[in-house]
Amino acid sequence: MGESVKEVAVLLATYNGERFVTEQLQSLKDQSFQSFKCYIHDDDSKDGTVSLVNEFVRKYPEQFELVHYKDGHGAIGNFMSLARYVRNNTEEPYVLFCDQDDYWHPTKIEKQLNALKEGENPSKPYLVYCDQEIVDGNLNLIAQSGMAYSKRQAGVDDSFKELVFENCAAGCTIGVNRSCLNLAIDNANETHIVMHDWWFMLMARCFGSIGYVNESLMKYRQHGLNTLGADNKRLAGKIRKYLRSMKESFSGKSRHVKKCESQIRDISGIPGSPFDKELKQIDKVLTKNKLSRMWYFLHNGYIKLKEWFTLLFV
Figure 1 (cartoon, one colour):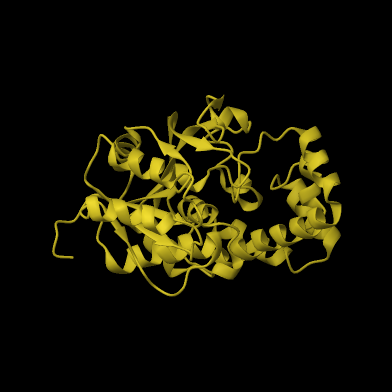
Figure 2 (figure 1 turned 135 degrees about the horizontal axis):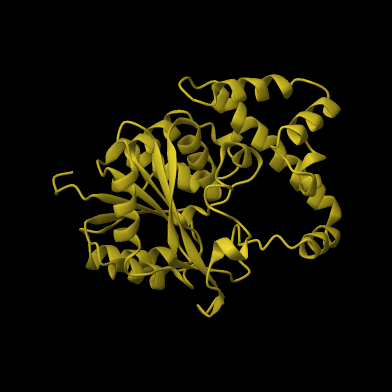
């Protein structure tokens, strides 16, 4: 770390991303704000991803670094291990998460960093997420606002009760301060985490605060190969999705809900949350019978009746 410390660490986890990764890396290189370093970890890609990444590392070593370590498999492991590496080996005060297949508008880092600086108490976890355009594999516009497309509302869907069973922000829209990074990594049990972005959202909400940039600062690509994609929450679409593969849908939903419960129970053991009473009550409720659990989460607004499919698995 002899070089001067940048202000922002961009965390880019890659896997078989040769189709899009060069375009994403170029969008980072073209940012209006240049005091950043992009740390890249590859999860044993079998295509040309690493070669393409290394081209940028060779051309721009001050801003791109391919890091090497043994752990970090799967989307969660890849991002969480990279976050742990940055937490333990770098000093940038702010961290942004980046997907290999998206495209950042030139002012994304600048505007998100400004929002982080304006809203944070450095001693408390702080997270800022932004809106994003939804595009197809060729960057053709599907929706101008991902939040509107998914029928989400900042300040509502990022509340404590909403975040217990549903996340509202994709990782590629998220930036955090060092306090949030430290708390998230120090308390992470990756076998209990639904996704890295959700864990960071919960850390910020339960122990600090969350901000929002009401502007689409990037293009969120939907191309059929996404680990997770944008969901427009239309009931008919959800029904068709589950009917196509009912057995897998039910088992997948069961695993998902149990992970939601596991990560919130892990958080209930961390001291210092203003939601400590609610967290302890959830931890207690989860030891009761199924009808008691269903009634508690429905009656107290953690799950709405229209989200009956989630309710079935608590």
